Amino acid sequence: MIALTIPKIRCGGCVASVEKAIHSIDASAQVIADIEARRVEVTTDADRQTLLTALDAAGYPAEAA
Image: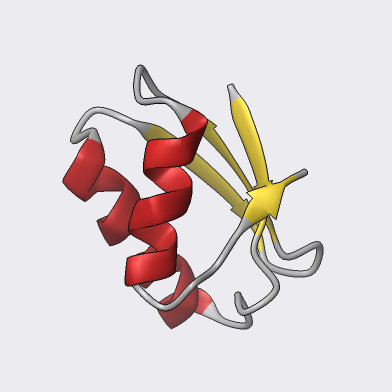
């Protein structure tokens, strides 16, 4: 499980965009989002840096939580 803080998450649309970016790397990834905490937990076989790069490209820069 990889926990990430994503300051730009503010609504369900943001979560959908984040999930799309993550699923572009690993279609079977499980994503649990907490909008209030601006945090996501991702269960994936992908490495953290690959996720961070994909999220940054999608306009949602993230950092390790």
